[in-house]
Amino acid sequence: MQSTMQDSPLLVREILRHGMQVYGASEVVTFEGDGSRRASFAEVGRRAAQLAHGLQGLGVGPGDRVGTFCFNHQEHVEAYLAVPSMGAVLHTLNVRLFPEQLKYVIEHAGDKVILSDATCAGLLARVAGECPSLERVVVVGEGDASAFDSLGSLADTISYEELLASRDTEFDWPDLDERETAAMCYTSGTTGNPKGVAYSHRSTYLHSLASTSSVNLGISSRDRALVVVPQFHANAWGIPYAAWLSGCDMIMPKQFLRAEALVRMIETERPTFAGAVPTIWNEVLRYAEAHDSDLSSFRVIVCGGSAVPLSLMQRFEELFGVPIIQAWGMTETSPLGAICLPPRDADPSEEWSYRMKAGRIAFGIEARVVDGEGRVAPCDGSSVGELEVRGPWVTGSYYGEPSSERFHDGWLRTGDVGTLDELGYLTITDRTKDVIKTGGEWISSVELENALMAHPAVFEAAVVAIPDERWNERPLACVVLADGRGASPDDLASYLRERVARWWVPERWAFLGEVPKTSVGKFDKKALRAGYAKGELDVVSISREA
Ligand code: ADP
Image (tube, rainbow, N blue to C red; front, side, top):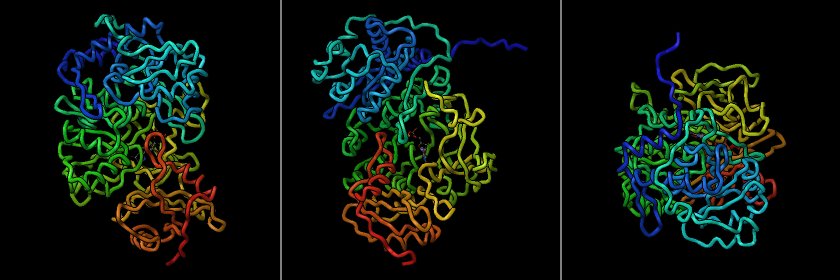
C-alpha cells in the first residue's frame, strides 16, 4: 500500500531556508585575532544567495565542483549553504595537505573554481597551475594574491566581496534529486592517496537531523557552538549544518587555533558547545590550568577523531564542571557514528568506564564486529575484530576509485579494531594499521596511551609498533613530558605494570619535544614509525622485568 505522505526531497536548500527564516537573528561570529565580526543568519543567508549568483556568473553550473581552501569563518558557512543549494558540489580542501596531495585531490575531484583564504593563497598557487580543471580562484579576506600572477589564465583572481557585490540577495534555488552530491571530502590519506567521499543532499540532511537530536549532540537555538574542528575535516563533523537548522550561534576561530586564542574566544563569547580533537583540548587544558582561565560556559564538549584520554575528561570536569563527551566517526560516516552518553541506569561508579569508550552507536548507523575469518563476532564487549558499519550517511564506495576491498557485503570496513557490547557501546582498541602484534597476540596502542597519559608527568604519549626479532613486534612508547615534570622510563614502566598486562609494557622509550601530528591534528604514527626506522629517535631501552 502506497503511503499518502508528500515526498519532498531532502535537500541542503531546506536547511538553508529553515535556518534563515526561523532563526534569522542567530549569529555567525568570526574571530579576527584582535576582535570579532558578527552577521545574523538572515544576513548570511542573503549573502549565500549573492554567492550563488556570483558563482553562476563565473560559469558554475549543476554538478560543478567548487573547492574551498579556507579556515572556519562566515564566508565558509556561506559556501556550505550556497554551493550545494545551487546544485553544485562543495569540495572542502584541507589547508594542511602537502602540495602533492593538494594537487591530487583538486585534480581528482575536478575542481572548477576554488574559494581560497588570502592567507592560504601562496600555498594554493604552488599547485594551481598544474590543475587543468581549475578555471578561477576567488580570494577570501584581505591579503596578497600576487602569487597567482605568473599562472597565466589563473592570474585573474577575483575577491570574494567583489564576487558578491551588488548581486541579488535572493536566489531561485533549484529542485534537485536528493541523491545528487552536495559535498565532497577526501580522507586525510594517512596511507596511500586520499580517498574521496561524496555526500548526497539526503545523507547531509539526515545526518544534520541526527546531530541535532537530543539523543546525540542535542544542539539547539539556546546554544552557541565554538566550531574548532575544521570545516575541511569531515564537514566540521556536520556542526555548521546542524547549528544552522537549529538556530545555534556559531563562533568561528579562523586560523587562530592556539590555546591562548581559543581560551580568549571562550572567555569573551561564552560558547555552550564545542567540537575538536583531543590534542586541541589537551593544549587548551594546559593553558587554562596555567592561566586560571574560565571555561565554565560550556554545557558540553564533543571530542573524537582519536581516543580521548580519560585523564583529559576527568580534569575538565574537575576544574570547570564541563563534560567532554567522546564520539566516534570518520569522513566516510559523515562523520557521526557513535556518541558516548552512559546508559540511564548506570551506577555512578560505572560512569567513567562508559565515558572512556568510543561511543554508543547512533540511531541510523548499524555496526558489527567481524573477526579475522570474516565471521560476525558476538556483541559481548570482549570479542575483538574489525568494525563494520552501514547506514544512510555511510559511504558505499569511494569517488572514482575501485575499492571493493574496503567493503564487505554492503558494509564499510572501517579499519578500526575493537569490540561492541550488548548495549551498543563501541570500544576502539586500535586502527588495523596501528595494532601491535607481539608473539601472536595483539597489544592495544590506544589503551597503553590512555594509561600513560593518566600519569601526572606525561603531557602526551603515542605508542607504535616497532620490529622485534623475537616477538615480531614490540611497542615503542613516545612520550612528551608535562611542563616542569620529570619521569624516567623505569618510573613510567612500573606505573604501567599496575595498570595493563605486564607483557604489554614497552621496553623501548623515546622522549620527544612534541608528538608529530597529521593534517587533522591526530598523532602521526606513520611519521613516528618512519623516524624510528631512520634512527632519528633517541631511544632508551630498559630491561623487561625491571
Ligand atoms: P583519518 O582517517 O585521516 O584519520 P578521519 O577523520 O576520517 O580521518 O578519521 C577516522 C578515524 O579516526 C576512525 O576510523 C578512527 O580510527 C579514528 N577515531 C575517530 N573517533 C575515535 C574515537 N573516539 N576513538 C578512537 N578512534 C577514533
